[in-house]
Picture 1 (cartoon, helix red, strand yellow):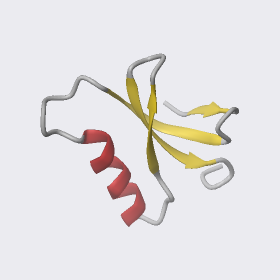
Picture 2: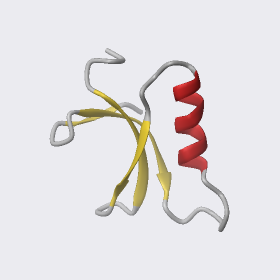
Picture 3: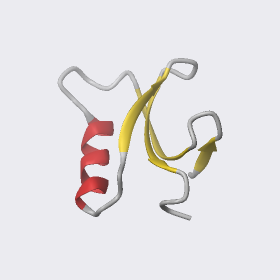
Length: 62
């Protein structure tokens, strides 16, 4: 699922529930794998949906 957040100027690669088990960082791990592949992925919190989003700047994955 790819979405665009125009406010951020970023594309959402994947969403992760903020309710992951304690000590589990699935969004950070996913972003680290994307960075290892050369994508400038980062993790942001979407407070409205209570989810962590892995995003890349617009234009990098079009």
